[in-house]
Length: 264
Ligand code: 3PY
Ligand code: MG
Image (tube, rainbow, N blue to C red; front, top):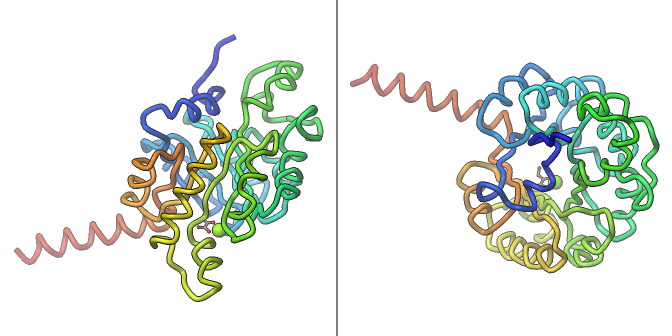
């Protein structure tokens, strides 16, 4: 059976091909925007349904367009919305990022929705996924647990304290660090400081623990520099800013270049 880059997403992540992956991150619920970003040299595209405004129909269309570009689509679900995790996998998502997973119980609830037995209780109905993966339903059933990746977000104190228990849950493929929420939690609400020494320390600890469990570690980086530092540290998949940050950075850079040339 032929294996595409999308089918082998989990394997490519585990092998840390190309020094780790860089994914786009899109909150604006527009499949056409996803179509444009998918043409850039990203390894994957995240649709953010937690803080972005995606509904299920638009997300399913977005997933299709990412896949059309030959790349894996990842969806971040709203907090505790595990039912949507199953639906997004049914629509062909290659990975689910679940925010605020603070305990082994949270992690087990996530696995229940994202993995078929014996790992979980994902309900059968991969209507679009079987088309996207182009395999027979029986093959999809056998392979889905390893074709798709379940990532638990670590972004609170209880999550950091329970990171070993979370990583030990069968069916959790790895953790995804949320530096913004984690910085708010660690400062008890005093600061939004995703690029601080406290976050670096937490990240290094999480990296050590993830490796001890043989699992993946990913993180949100606010820009390219941050993403580069995370990759250098050894993370498996990183974000290099939101689509709106990248759009506005591009606009500012173009305006500044035009003004500079005009004034010279
Ligand atoms: C965080 O940094 O808290 C995130 O959830 C990344 O978007
Ligand atoms: Mg967060």
